[in-house]
Amino acid sequence: MINSKTKEYISNNLEKDVSWLALHSAKDSDVDMRMAIQQIEGRQKAKHKLPELFMLDDIIYPQRISIEQCSSSASASYKASLFSGETFADLSGGFGVDTFFFSKQFKNGIYVEPNEELCTIFDYNSKILKINNVSIVNSNLENFIDSLNRVDFIYIDPSRRDNYGKRVYEIHDLTPNVLLFKDKLLSKSKHLMIKLSPMLDITALKRQLPEIYELHVVAVNDECKELLCVLDKDNKNADFQIVTKNIKANSEETYIGKYSRERALKPLFVSEIEQFLYEPNAALMKSNLYNSLCYDFGVKKLARETNLFTNSYPIENFPGRSFKVLNIIPYQPKKIRKELEHIKSASITVRNFTISAMELRKSLKIKEGDKIFIFGTTLSSNNRVIIVCEKL
Image (cartoon, rainbow, N blue to C red; front, side, top):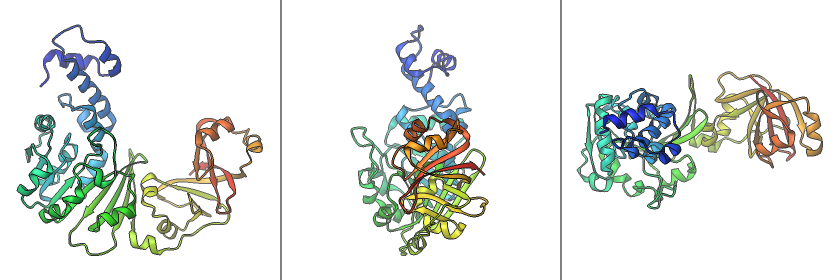
C-alpha cells in the first residue's frame, strides 16, 4: 500500500510536526506526501493511545478522524474482557481496534464498516496482527442487519459526528440511531453493547434504553472516555449495575454500585471538614454514585454540589485521590494570599467554587507543584474555603 520511497520518508520524519511537513513537500516526487503525513500523524497519535500497534512498523493508519474516534488499547482491552464465546459482530468497525481485541475472546467474528478505505486498511492490518478469525463486510448497519445471523455478542460504536462534521452526543443524533435498531439487534444476540459519549445523563439513558442491565463508566488515567451500555432484552427490572473503572498505567480503580440503591440512599453531609479529604476519580464522578460511596467507605460529602468527601481516618483503596488535611482557611480574597505566602508551589483544584483553578492560582501567585495540594470549594453552610492538603 505504501511504496519504498514513502516508507523511507515516513521513517525519517516520525518526530516532525505534521503541519510543518505539509508545507514542505519531499524533494523526491516518488514520495506520496498525503499518505506519508497520514501515517506520521497516525503513528504519533498511536504512541500512547495504541502502543501495541505503534510497535509494529507496517501498520497502516487511516485518516485523523478515525484515529481520534477509535478506542484506546486500554479501553478496548477492558471491554473485550467482559465477554467471550463463539461469535461476535462489531457493527462499527472503523480502524478496527475494538475488533482486534474482541477477536482474542471469540472463535469467530464479523467486522462491518461502510467506508471502503477503512475496510481495506483493516484487511491489510489483520494480516500483520494475525487476525484470521474475522470476516469483513463493507456495508452499513441498515443494509446489513437483516442478513446478520444470530451471534453471542454485538458491539456498536455509533459515530458522534453529523453530516457536517459537527460533534453530537445525544443518542438520536448518532449515526446510526441505535434507538431505531436496538430491538432488531437484541433479536440477533442476547447481549448488545453500545458505546456512548460520557456527556450523556445516566438517568436519561435508562429512559431511552430500558433494557440496560450494566453500565460501565470507563476512564483512562482519570479522564472519562466512554459509557458502555450493555443491554439484555430479557431484563425486565428497573435496576441496573453501574461499574466504574479508572484504568491507570500500572493499576486500576474499580467501584460498583446499583442504580436503585443509589437513588434510595439518603445523602450524608458533614458540618466540618475532618482530618482526611477524598476526591473520587473521573469515572466515579460521572457515575454519580455519591450516596453509595458515603455508606460503603464511611465518608461524608462537603456539600450537595461539592463532590469532595471527608472523614477522620485514612481509607485504603479509595477510588480516587486521598489527602491529609493540613489547613482550612476561609476564602477572603484580600487576606488569603497572605495566609498562603509560605507556599511557593502547589497543585490547585476547584470544586463548586466561584472562580476557576487558573484564576485562583493567579490570585495566589503560586506555581505548579506536586507536594502540596490546594482545593477551593464551598461547604454546606455556603461558606467558601481553601483546603491545604498533602497526598496520602
